[in-house]
Length: 259
Image: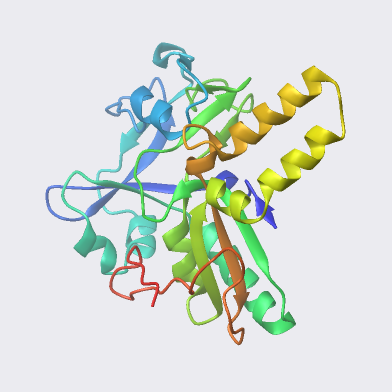
């Protein structure tokens, strides 16, 4: 099981320029002559996970800043060589790509198929490629990721379509589905009732109900967290609570097909 694992892996960030080429967004020291830019806006950070109403840290205190590369970097040429990145995005669009996630997903898919295993990936993210989710989290609040290096967690939303594409022809992927739907299908309500009957302490009961709501409510973790199942390529039948394997269109990895 990989729970909040892939969101912590490194990402590359790119922006499609006027010429149609991809410009890598790099990190520069704050006192350089490069043109500063924002790679993630406070509004976008707040919209990704609803756990904070403000952003800690201010750009003037940053040790580093984001800049656009002047030309096509080797990372842009290598990571975005697949034509789908040119076909699916317009000028000005940004994408975050994690080659390390793809590498690990390939290893995971191969191991699962070779050993008749199974994997569950639970993380926050979406089933498509996003462009502005990189952020810092410190003391349970969003923070400027370029402030005080080493003092906070750095994270980005998981691109589940990218993971599925990496596992294509190596293993079968089911989902992702929302965490709330997954937990309800797996019987979280029945488990909650068992736990409530096991104690007469009002505070414990209230805490149990609050934990249930936090895990399953669409305005909390129930929707933003997703669950992806990975089974051997030779497996038959969908695991509960998933339906059919999620198909990957080679020309559009964000497209899904339940047939």
